[in-house]
Image (cartoon, rainbow, N blue to C red):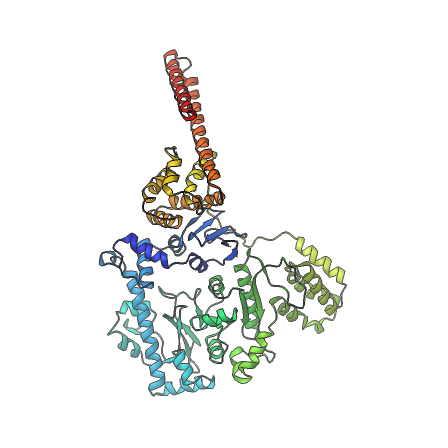
Length: 635
């Protein structure tokens, strides 16, 4: 048990991996010893956001945001620091002294909501497997028709919500308050009586778990022919955000890692059918379209970022494929190209892939669930293995209708659909091959098509939004030479491979004056910490804990850590030289400021002989002090 709040924070930090924490919000790509991605704190197209796993910090070189894992969680999720620490302590099973537990009501509420959801899932499942009624028989017949056995029901905790208005409520109100049950989306007030009633009734229940396995929400499928809507899903709550949770990920995540790829499907039963028949890396969005948060979540589990889109084969499913592909491409924008050629084409050694998008489209035109049940899982696996890249799917989808071309005008329309796809290909060799293939298929001149693609690429990029969003800049001014020298000097404390102790570095810096208020504050805290910490990582962790509520200080710490990398791999002599050069620079700039100040005073007092003489004497004293100081140093 932690005796102090600082000890508790230290224990939490020991269990947090900065790369894993940031990857929940940012798609990262490793380059050298750092990871890079698009900054979550401002809009950008070229990655300037860096994560240093060795020191456990992040830094954006564009907007200036910086901090550690805790500050990242706090900023991206807009959390208060104390409740966030309590929540993380509970997550890691850390015992918190009673005096620190005040104010943790939100955490307790979330825990109660998850417990209530789990009991509800178990209740619904028990009703389906061990009770008898007309609606239960209808539900079992429906599930059996979809090839769902009792073993599958148990594995995915599938259940039935009875017709009664109060069955679940009467069962759970003994253990949970109305507030907990209502916030968990299990009950709602009746419009007629105002009394609480069960939210889900006469429906097959599909419990939804987050990636950690906690029950957080439900999908409910109607079983009566005239029942509307067909699917009723839980609303967003404290424990559930449908834009950030993928159905089946908890049971699929190990398979996604092993296969280094994930299959995105459209519905709950598609995923259940796939996983139950050995296609275990299948997941689906929960009653919503694919979002960038979904893509970020998946990118943490597949290193190659190989994503298969396996939606329904009707027109709505095809549109979902197109929308999903655009969301994926946007999420990976700036991190490299989407893979645009298969092994049949020659690749360049410089090709770097941010991700790989493939489309699963069974030839019989059946939905994934129906195909697996009627044709078989092995056949579906073969289709997955031969799934075309997105670009091939898009081109084939257009070219399969080439027989409809009757006039030159119709041919032109086809070409206009194809050109935007061809212009996305970055590899020149691959683009030439695709242009050749399309020209042959449409019986048009290859050079003319290549020229049209070139013209399209040269067109100015249209604004992505009619009304551009205002971006608030964190960095609003250029760093002065004076401030830069002070930061350079203070950054030597953060050099990880230097040959000196913190105390020795402090002696070398001496009583050099810092004029920036935040730097003075940070230097003062470093002076207190260097006697108790053993290395740079501990120093940084303690500084971020000390300044957990001070955004300016956090940014300065991130700046200092980043600057310190310039002084790595230096010999002891060069390290000393860096300190001396920056000390001299600071002293020189301070003297220049003082001289300028006296010059202005003298000019203002030139008509007052007494005041002018006083200023001259001050200047003479400063010169004498400087000469004496230089003489002592030379001796």
